Amino acid sequence: MAATEGEEEEVESPRFAPMISFDRDRHLTFLEMMYQLLPHPYQTQEINHLTLVYFVISGFHILNALERIDKIAVVNLVLSFQAHPRNKDEINNGQFYGFHGSRTSQFPPDDNGVLVHNCGHLASTYCALAILKIVGYDFSRIESEIILTSMKNLQHPDGSFMPIHIGAEKDLRFVYCAAAICSMLEDWSGMDKEKTKNYILNCQSYDGGFGLIPGSESHGGASYCAVASLRLMGYLEDNLLSKATQSSIIDVPMLLDWCLQRQAGDGGFQGRPNKPSDTCYAFWVWAVLKMLGGHKFIDSKALHGFLLTCQSELLVFVTAPVWWIQQIPGRAA
Image (cartoon, rainbow, N blue to C red):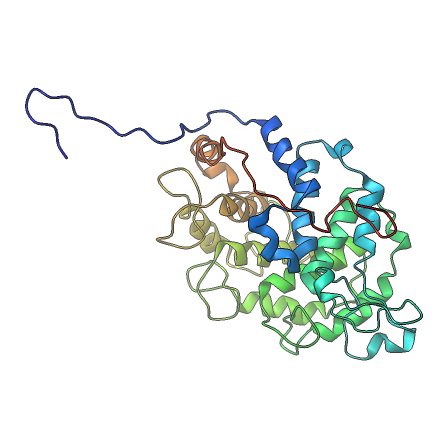
């Protein structure tokens, strides 16, 4: 209500003033809490156990604090999620021998200690390998042939990938997971690259962005998955805008324009037109611009300010003991 004449208008202050600098210690405290116990609000996401672990471990890595984790425990945890065929003849039985997302999707082993009921997931496999890469695991010890050969079972004739052998949605998210897996294992035998490339190109929309599937609305996350996949597969050069040639398999000027329009008035990035800014799109969209060489055209100061305001001053969690990162097979919690 407006103030009457002679009165001062009372301005309601926010409950918490935004933080104006990056508080590294507070972020590390948050990650350490996540490392020890899974916060109660996240326990419904236990099916995505490895994805949550990846967020925590990559957070420590970005903040140069990997010394705060037990790398051997992390490696043993991740490897315990891998699905194994009983013999090599089963590699082509239609199942995917990657990594399970959680214990709840992993059946108990048989009398011989073999996990005979597989439910490997493409996204979980991507997260598993990324974690192992971060902590410095020797990839020569990974049975990459089993992963890659069985991953072919997930690719559809149009070049797309579904995440699990029993069927699910297929879109650019899982194309990116497949490309990242092949890149980390340094072996592209797990996919038909030409079909995958054509599927990605069919996802570029009339406005320059990429949709998750051909004909769908352009989306910041989908655009990242498309460009990053093509970059990993060797179909796109890095920093395209700095090259003398303007030829490319994608419409770079349209994509650049679409991405630049995603920076909102508050400095953050939106994933689609007319949507609020979100910290995740500061990564997805900015990363596309970085790969294209167009990140220099954004208002970096405004983006920096937006991200700082997204920090929370409070670190209050209701936690409950769960099977989490530090507990490994054969070790007490």
